[in-house]
Length: 510
Ligand code: HXC
Image (cartoon, rainbow, N blue to C red; front, side):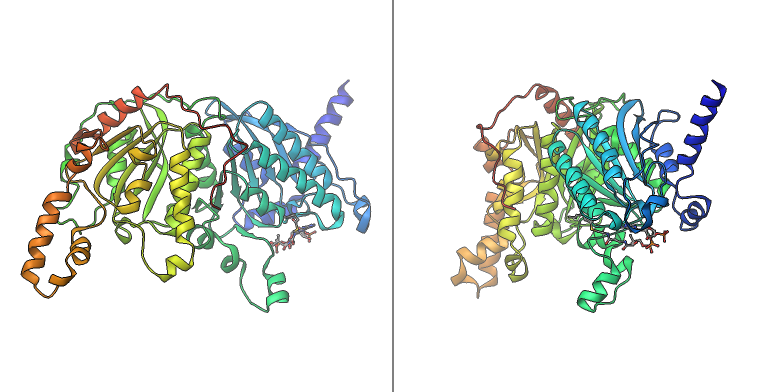
């Protein structure tokens, strides 16, 4: 018996050694943790249960028969995050660069199937070079099976990817089909093909960082939803994120205890809007002052900063926030902002997370740059997303709600449930100056007349009451009572049930 027990320990030890001391040292030297160290940090202490640590690849090409490492480059299993079940796989870069063999794929697939069947989130920690070159089509087949499961689980359980090393091929395409991608600055990269291949094919010389570093993917491509300075911070933030996420599309949102009174007044909000309507203010100040304990998990903070999206809580229950940001491009909607917000709205709707929308938008951004870039289609994405969403939708217009952007930003007409406006709201087809310049073109040579016209327009339309008179605004609320109003609206909407007409799926303007 003792020998058998020892044998288990020996085998476990071999698997835990991964690619060996030298490669682990190299991993640490690069500032990266090993796969198992990462899993330990991500999950509650002692909760990780590993599966399949003895699995080895079945490849006999290129001398691979002699080169086997138990576990085969991926650590898989499940554990808990603040007590809630989560499935996890972590690519082990020290074993064949974390690349995916048929056997490695089987391990991932097992975990993906378990997560879906048992309706719990799955988190992938990526540090890997894609399909294992020595296995050829068997590895490609393996990736196909992983992709299939990514798609089937989409909208059923949350799938989160953390990029923690150089990732290529399938190790970027699989994350691309999950709900969120986070990266680690300076040590992680994402590209379909690496710098060497780029140089061969296009003669372009780029570094891994220039091609697919965290700054590229958080600011330019918008592939990544956020980036952190190191592995530890990234993993701790993933624990924080998981506290916001429902376990599945049927579980309902998590409810955390909070000491923040739901009816807390916030008098400072009464002076948030500057007297000059063209002066910016920070919409994040409003968000932080309204939500529970100022706890806001922002998504895509560095991309399309003219719109702010992220997760927060009201009365301990998760909500999604969408807010125009007057500090950036006056909060205008452009293609990037529309795409960013549309994806977030659809994420929230999939998982029954109520949406709270703060509106201060001067319209869509004019110009050839935007029009040639498909603003019509991208803007339509956001309109489509808000319209199809059946979750509780609460909207607060703080200042401008002009033109098509008024309709798009969760207005009453596209099934906003409770639509509030602050007394400073201006709901109109466009701003006073633009409107007068079109309506009174003939008088443009007479500044005194134009000023009078602008004042008239301002008085008549730059307020919330024209809309409120029609019932497009349910109530004009005082800024200091915004938290209480939103909390009450969400309480009232808790059992909201709306179904869209049956369809196979819709045809979102992609
Ligand atoms: C087998 C691989 C590998 C792979 C890396 N290694 N990628 N082994 N298959 N795909 C091995 C290396 O041989 C090396 O082994 C070890 O992992 C570390 O790799 P290095 O190159 O030394 O590390 P680094 O310089 O940091 O570069 C990392 C890398 C690079 C950027 C990931 O290795 C790379 O470009 N790999 C190939 C990426 C790729 O083209 N993959 C196929 C994609 S196709 P030793 O023994 O020396 O330590 C694909 C299909 C899916 O995935 C379908 C998509 C739709």
